[in-house]
Image (cartoon, rainbow, N blue to C red; front, side, top):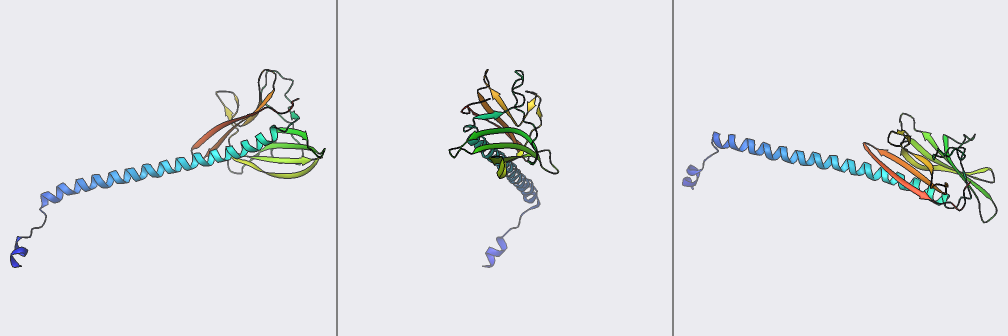
Length: 197
C-alpha cells in the first residue's frame, strides 16, 4: 500500500499548459455550436410563424374569392393598373384594400371587406376581414398578422396587395408578405371568381 502511494504523481506544469488550450478549444467549439443552433432555431420559428400567418390569410381569401360574383375595384377601368383599390367605407377599421360580394343560397347579399390596420408601434399591419350580410355587419375578425405593405422596389407595388391577373382581369391574386423577427416570407394566392366586374 505504501508503495502505491509513493509512486503516484501529479500533473506537471507542462501537462497543465498543454491541457488548458485543448480544453479551451473544446469549450469554444461547443459554445459556437450551441450559439449556431440557437440562432437557427429562432430563424426557423420566425419563418414558421410568418408562413402560418400567410396560410391563414390566404385561406380566408381563397374561400371568399371563389364565391364572389362581384370584385369591387375603383381602379378597374384603368388598364395600366393591376392593383385593386377600394374606397374607404365608414365603420370599418383600417384602409380597405379588397371587397367581394355574392348572393348566398338564402338570397342574402354577402359583402366581405379586407382592410389593413396599423399595429401601434410597428410598421407591420393586421389584415381584418369584415362580413356584411344585407348591409349589416355580421362578423369581423383578424385574418392575418405581421403583414408588410411597404412598397416593393422591384415591382413598385405594395408587398401585400390584391391584384388582377390575365389580360382580361379574369382572376384575382393575393400577394402577401409576412414578417416575424428578421424573417420575411412572401406567398401568392390566385383565384378565379365565378364572375368579375
